Image (cartoon, rainbow, N blue to C red; front, side, top):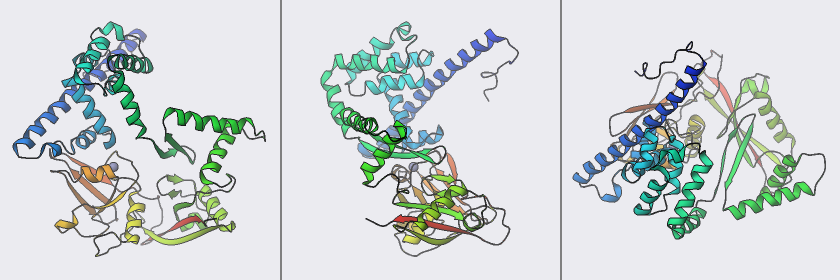
Length: 424
Ligand SMILES: [Zn+2]
């Protein structure tokens, strides 16, 4: 549908190709501005409709950020940022919107300006908008860091108290998160007030300075972090509990089918075997095994059922293993809730088919007015959830196959292994 707008002639010559890259970049910015205008208009229309229908002001616009995220194929957690950016640009920051429309700013740089001005009241925000963006020439050549620093400087001059208050507020957001890294590694990230973060880093560096034993500085810092947080020497491997899913052939037969760590994703068969062997040989460890069954063609884990409202432990574990991560398309957040797709209060059964693993945010979003989720399990036991939003748009989410398989027998045995360490 955009063939003409995005057409490229590979034989156009070097200068024309560079010019085309520049044009397309401006097109991306213009498209981002158009998305912002559409999102702000949608917000206004939705809220007006809800006001007319008697929805209390505090509940209007619920779930809209998640709808925008789905339409943009982005994680729901970013939907709020997109909608916030749209409303700020359209209603409060016309010069920033103009710079985005004309390609002087990228969407990310406009986001940085909006973010740095978020603590200001509307008059100061408009002053910042005029000062920084009314003259597009002033924005030329500014990178992400400089744009953010300029916006921050202006905000601080206009209202120093607001900036200080915001810094105090930001301390409430301190947290620790984890996400997968390549090569069976993981990123453990701490968001800390700057003084605390710097002192943690300095303490780890000091350990590296005083401990020369052949390990690299980075290795010593990482080992020291593990030791001080867990209270155990870094050389004693494995976190407290690891849930692994692998085929019996991978564990016992030397097959190369990857195993799966719950909350992490696939790991090579050899690494999984080494983890199990280590847990079995270390007397402080204990490995518990349970058998799971996967469909041989789809790799989908096969269901269990229960009559209770609360998902019983076995079913709850099963849903966690089946879904892996939040089932909202593009979300990828860890699972916090085992949720009834068709609500229990309206007759939805407590079954694996009617269950969804979701994160907290998505659990609330899907309970907003006008949202519906239909779930099915097909003949290969593949579990599908179809999300319908208030505008009638639908988005599909399939539970991931847990591991490929070439077995053609009726069912294929998987082994779930929990590797746990006794408390010292
Ligand atoms: Zn989610």
